[in-house]
Amino acid sequence: MNQKNKNQEQGEKLDMIRHSTSHIMAAAMRRIFPEVKFAIGPTIENGFYYDFDLGKESISESDLEKIENLMKEIIRQKLNFEKSSLSIKEALELMKGQSYKQELIEELGKNNETEVSFYQVGDFTDLCRGPHVDSTKELGHFKLLSVAGAYWRGNVKNKMLTRIYGTAFASQKELNEYLKNLEEAKKRDHRKIGQDLDLFLIDPVVGMGLPMWLPKGAILWRTMEDFWYKEHLKNGYELVRTPHIGNQRLWEQSGHWNFYNESMYPPLEVSKSLKELQNNIEIKEKEEYLLKPMNCPFHVMLYQSRPHSYRDLPLRWAECGTVYRYEKSGELNGLVRVRGFTQDDAHIICAKEQVADELKRVVDFIIFMLSTFGFKDYGIYLSLRDPNNKEKYAGNDEGWEFTQNVLEKVAKEKKLDYIRQEGEAAFYGPKIDFKIKDCLNREWQCSTLQFDFNLPEKFDMIFTNKEGRHERPYMLHRALFGSFERFIGVLIEQYAGEFPLWLAPVQVKILPISEKFNAYAQEVADELRLQEIRAEIDLANDTLGKKIRNTEHEKIPYMLILGDKEQTAKKVSIRKRKEGDLGQTDLKSLVERLKKEIANRK
Image (cartoon, rainbow, N blue to C red; front, side):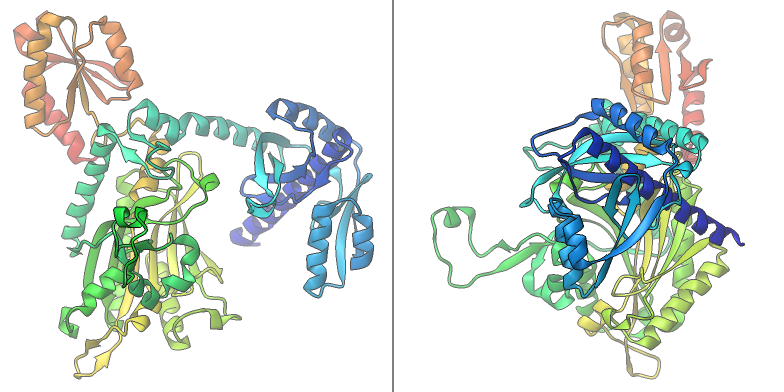
C-alpha cells in the first residue's frame, strides 16, 4: 500500500472513531437528560460535535467531566455498533418524540429514499448512515472540549440548540499530543497576542469583522507591503489600483450577481445622499453599486479599455485591493475570518503558449514568498473539475483538458508533493492551492493559483495574434498571501508574536537606567531612525529590571541599555531576545549588525 492510500485509510478509520464517539456522547446525554431531543452529531476537522435540545435544562463546561465519565462507563461495556434499516414509516415511528430526527427522515422520504439506516449501541439507537467502528473496545481516547450554542441547521429563525464539541484519537499518545498542541494554540492565539502587542483592534461600534490597525500593527503591515511591492516589480509585474465599489451592471456582466451573491452585500444606492434618503426624497433615476468581493472584473475592464496584440502579452497586473465579503457574525474569527480584507491580488493575461512558463514563475514566487516569512512546510492541492458533472463548469472540454494537464505537468516539473482533488475546482477553472502548515501542523489556506474561463468569456476578452486574427487570452488569478489580514494572523501565531527582526514593529527598545541618560537615549534613537531602524525609548520612571521585563513582554528583538559607562564611552550595551547580554559596542557597529540581520530577513 502506498503512503497516500495508507494515509487515506488511517483518515477514514479516525473519522469512524470520532463519529462513533459522538454517538457515545449522545447516549451519555440521554442518561443525564431523559427528555433530550437529538439533532445531528457529525465529525469535523480534528474532532466531532453533537447538537442537543435540552428544553429548559442547560449545561456548562463544568459539566463536561460528568459526561465524559458516563461515556467511559458505556465504552467499558464493550458494546457492539449494530446497523439496521427501516422503512420511512417505521423510522418515523421509532423516532417518535424526536422532532429533529423526524424532520430529517421526512426529507429523506421526499428525496425518494425508501429505507433509512440506524445504528444501535447498547440501549441507544440513532439515525445514521455510518460507518462506525465494530465495538466500543476501539474507543476511549477522547476529550470533550467546549459547549456552544448553535441554531438548528444554522438558521437564526430556528431554535438555539446546545452544541458539545469533542475530539478523539486512535491512541492516548495521539490525544495527549493534540491536547498539548491545543494548549499551545491558546497561548499563540493571534487575537490575544494582537491585543497584548497593540497590533490591531476590532470594535463592534466600527463593525465586527472590520479590523483597524494600531501603529505597531500598521508598521508590520507596511513592512510586508513594501517587501511585496519591491518583489513584484522585480518579477515583472505592473501595479494597478481599482475602486472599492462597482456599478451593479459590472457584477451582472461578470456573473457575480448570480453565482457569488451569497458572499456579497446588498447594493448601495449612490443616486441620492443620506440626507435625501432620510427626508424620503424620490430620485427619478436609480443608480446602484456594490462593495466589491474581488478585484477581477476591474482588472478585466482595464484590459478592455484598449486593444491588445500578442506583443503586449503577458500582462502581469498586481494590486493590494481591499474587498468585502458577507460572513455571518458567528463565523467571524479575529483576522483569519473577516468581512473586509486586502487581497494581494494579481492577474496574468497571456497567450496559450505562454501559460506553462507563467505558471512556473508563479509557483516559484509563491514558494519564495512563503519561505521568506518562515513557512517551509505546506500542503499542495491540485483541484480539478468533476468529470461526471461537466455542465456546472464554465469553459469547454478543450480548455479544461489543456489547463488541467498543464497545471499538473508544471506541478510535476517543479517536484511539488501535491494531492489531486477531482470535483474541487472552482466553476470557472482548475487551481493549485498552497495551504501553509504552522508550527502546530495546522493548515491555512493562503496562496492560490487559478485559471479563469468565466471572465474572458463574459467580457469577450481578445488579442490579435501573430496571424492577425482575434484570439481569446488565458487568464490566471493568483494570490501569494491570500489576504494580508489572514496571513498576519497566521504569522502572529507562527512566531507567537516574536517576529524576526526585519518584521518586528519595534526592532530596538532603548532603556536609559535613569532620567539623566534620556538625552543620550534620544541621540541614539535619532541615529537608529536615520538608518531606518525602528527604535523606541522607554522613558518610564521604572527600575531597569522592570524595563527589561516589559520589553521582553513586548517581544522586542533588541534592548539597548544606557548608563554612565555607555554615555561616557559613546557606546551601548546590547541585550538580545532569548540570548541575553551581548556586551558593549559602538553605535556604528550596532547599525551594521542590525542592517545585516534585517537584509538576511532574520
